[in-house]
Image (tube, rainbow, N blue to C red):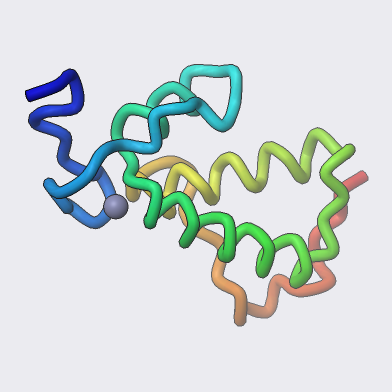
Length: 98
Ligand SMILES: [Zn+2]
Protein backbone atom coordinates (compact mmCIF):
# COMPACT_ATOMS: atom_id res chain seq x y z
CA UNK A 1 0.00 0.00 0.00
CA UNK A 2 1.21 3.44 -0.89
CA UNK A 3 -0.16 6.72 -2.14
CA UNK A 4 -0.28 5.51 -5.75
CA UNK A 5 -2.64 2.70 -4.80
CA UNK A 6 -5.68 2.93 -7.04
CA UNK A 7 -3.81 4.54 -9.93
CA UNK A 8 -5.38 3.96 -13.31
CA UNK A 9 -3.74 5.53 -16.37
CA UNK A 10 -6.14 7.92 -18.11
CA UNK A 11 -4.84 6.91 -21.54
CA UNK A 12 -4.09 3.18 -21.62
CA UNK A 13 -6.11 2.20 -18.56
CA UNK A 14 -3.34 0.19 -16.93
CA UNK A 15 -3.73 -0.28 -13.22
CA UNK A 16 -0.25 -1.68 -12.85
CA UNK A 17 2.63 0.49 -11.86
CA UNK A 18 2.63 4.10 -10.91
CA UNK A 19 1.82 7.44 -12.51
CA UNK A 20 4.57 9.57 -13.97
CA UNK A 21 4.84 11.38 -10.64
CA UNK A 22 6.86 14.44 -11.58
CA UNK A 23 4.93 17.13 -13.47
CA UNK A 24 6.59 17.68 -16.89
CA UNK A 25 5.19 21.24 -16.93
CA UNK A 26 4.61 23.69 -14.12
CA UNK A 27 0.93 24.13 -14.83
CA UNK A 28 -2.39 22.36 -14.27
CA UNK A 29 -2.04 20.03 -17.25
CA UNK A 30 1.46 19.10 -16.09
CA UNK A 31 0.17 18.18 -12.66
CA UNK A 32 -2.65 16.20 -14.25
CA UNK A 33 -0.18 14.25 -16.40
CA UNK A 34 1.90 13.50 -13.31
CA UNK A 35 -1.14 12.12 -11.48
CA UNK A 36 -3.07 10.39 -14.27
CA UNK A 37 -0.61 9.18 -16.91
CA UNK A 38 1.80 6.24 -16.74
CA UNK A 39 5.46 6.58 -17.78
CA UNK A 40 4.89 4.38 -20.87
CA UNK A 41 2.17 6.65 -22.21
CA UNK A 42 4.32 9.68 -21.50
CA UNK A 43 7.10 8.11 -23.58
CA UNK A 44 4.56 7.47 -26.35
CA UNK A 45 3.64 11.15 -26.27
CA UNK A 46 7.28 12.24 -26.40
CA UNK A 47 7.72 10.17 -29.58
CA UNK A 48 4.53 11.65 -31.01
CA UNK A 49 5.63 15.15 -30.05
CA UNK A 50 8.92 14.66 -31.86
CA UNK A 51 7.02 13.57 -34.99
CA UNK A 52 4.80 16.64 -34.82
CA UNK A 53 7.76 18.97 -34.25
CA UNK A 54 9.59 17.51 -37.22
CA UNK A 55 6.51 17.26 -39.42
CA UNK A 56 5.38 20.84 -38.88
CA UNK A 57 8.80 22.31 -38.32
CA UNK A 58 7.73 23.69 -34.96
CA UNK A 59 9.84 26.22 -33.16
CA UNK A 60 9.38 25.71 -29.43
CA UNK A 61 10.32 29.32 -28.75
CA UNK A 62 7.05 30.13 -30.48
CA UNK A 63 3.98 30.47 -28.25
CA UNK A 64 1.68 29.26 -30.99
CA UNK A 65 3.77 26.14 -31.47
CA UNK A 66 3.75 25.36 -27.76
CA UNK A 67 0.02 25.91 -27.59
CA UNK A 68 -0.45 23.60 -30.58
CA UNK A 69 1.58 20.90 -28.85
CA UNK A 70 -0.36 21.34 -25.59
CA UNK A 71 -3.66 20.87 -27.42
CA UNK A 72 -2.33 17.79 -29.14
CA UNK A 73 -0.95 16.41 -25.92
CA UNK A 74 -4.30 16.78 -24.19
CA UNK A 75 -6.03 15.01 -27.05
CA UNK A 76 -3.38 12.31 -27.17
CA UNK A 77 -3.32 11.57 -23.45
CA UNK A 78 -6.85 12.42 -22.35
CA UNK A 79 -8.85 12.32 -25.60
CA UNK A 80 -10.06 15.83 -25.06
CA UNK A 81 -9.02 19.33 -25.98
CA UNK A 82 -8.88 20.86 -29.41
CA UNK A 83 -8.49 17.64 -31.34
CA UNK A 84 -5.44 15.83 -32.46
CA UNK A 85 -3.61 16.93 -35.56
CA UNK A 86 -3.18 14.16 -38.04
CA UNK A 87 0.29 13.69 -39.41
CA UNK A 88 -0.98 12.97 -42.91
CA UNK A 89 -3.52 15.66 -43.51
CA UNK A 90 -3.32 18.36 -46.15
CA UNK A 91 -2.46 20.85 -43.40
CA UNK A 92 1.20 20.51 -44.08
CA UNK A 93 2.70 23.81 -45.09
CA UNK A 94 -0.58 25.61 -44.47
CA UNK A 95 -0.02 26.59 -40.87
CA UNK A 96 1.12 30.17 -40.54
CA UNK A 97 2.73 30.48 -37.13
CA UNK A 98 3.04 34.25 -37.46
ZN1 LIG B 1 -0.73 4.55 -19.75
